Amino acid sequence: MLLLKNKEEGKKTVPFSLTLLNNNRILVLSGPNAGGKSICLKSLGLLQLMMQSGMLIPVHETTEMGVFERLFIDFGDQQSLEDELSTYSSRLKNAKYFLENATEKTLLLIDEFGSGTDPKIGGAIAEAMLKELNQKKVFGLVTTHYSNLKMFAYNHKGIVNGCMTFDKDTLSPTYELTIGRPGSSYAYEIAEKTGLSKQLLNYAKNKTGKNEKAVDQLLVDLQKEKQELTEKLEGIEKHQKNLDRLIKNYNQMSEDLSIRRKKLRLDIKQQELQETSRSNKEMERIVKELKEEKNLEKAKEALANAKSKRKELTNNVDKLHGEVFTKQIIKEPIKEGDFVRLHTGGEIAIVESINKKKATIIVNNLRMTAKLSDLVHSKPPVTAPIKGKITTDTRSDQSKFINKIDLRGMRKEEALKTLELFVDEALMANGSSLKIVHGKGDGVLRKAVKQKLREYSAVSSIAHEPAELGGDGVTIAELT
Image (cartoon, rainbow, N blue to C red; front, side):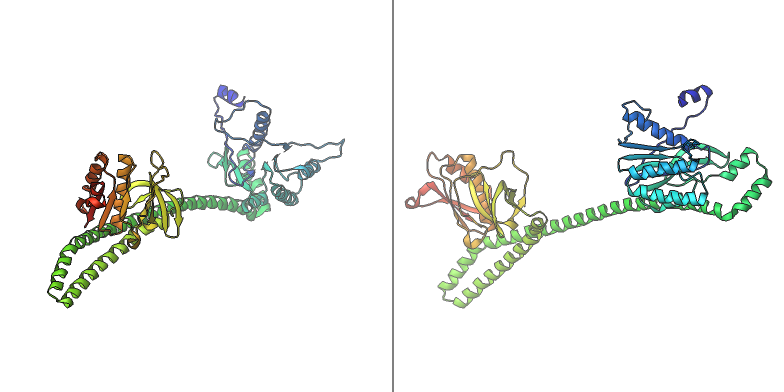
């Protein structure tokens, strides 16, 4: 109605937006007379009643409103000769009822809270009531001119100040609602605008003194500074979060770079280790010649030097291996049921069980044991691995590594995947000779095994066992 009326008269209709966030439940609304405090209060009560009656209300489409079991309202003059009630006593009677019956699901609306008696006494009693109502966790809006209530709202959680703004230049209200700071009554400014004489106003100012107005203005300034500091603090916290995120990203990038460098060093050392393996046969030949020449001291010395060099390279590789891959295990511990793969590559496996620093993993039809440090997490395959019946006891530990595997009875694809894991494990265990039993049959699996072995640069030779030991049903692969 107001919008339609103002439209006809060419006047501006000012909407208000009321939001109570976090733990703020009660709004203490202050500001000049004729500034719109009571209109705001009555509009809120009317909209709440309309909404809870199932009526459409003129609000923004994103508006959220609560549903209350009780709505307590106190505004207007309720004095009564018949009931022997003055303005103030009628208000005290209402306040008593509110205090006795208010709950967390109560909406409280009080206009000119504490008025009707001596301002100091009325303000003190109103403050005590506001304290108790806040403890009951009610929701509400109260209007006031009392500075002590503004200060109380400033110092207590659950209550927030608000004001109807005032244009100091035109000495007229703007009817705009501002949450977060109290407003001044601008009593002298409004009185001056109405035409009261300066002599009268000067007398009144002398009676009230400078302190009263100074306190009111100080409260407004304090609330403004508090809001500015709160906004700055929120900005600092936002910047701190961004800084923390950047630091985290930097640390991660630095760590990733360090890991890459160590991986590069690991690759170099592994190549050196493979080169020493290739020279083993040459060293054996030299030692054999020295033994034939009965120069045992030189033979022992040459053999010791070769072993020392290989041991040093092996230790360096193991150390780098631990630095590169152990951190991944610490960050994301491998658990039973996780999908994993060897860090050197190969098929995806599933962890069946974990025993201390080792894990039993299954890939297709192969069950094997590997060190946890040799495994990394992997995404699940399109089809989860199925636990097989064929078991081989290949292990990462060189002292326990068994260099024989039986592929008989497997399909071609299944056998090649099993062979791939077997060779990977052999390389990690520094194996030198592998025995692959595939049977004779029509020779398809034998050819596939040879072709697969030729893909590894570490395989130096491929041959078959003698006829009495299996012939071409068994393939022997030598690793360098």
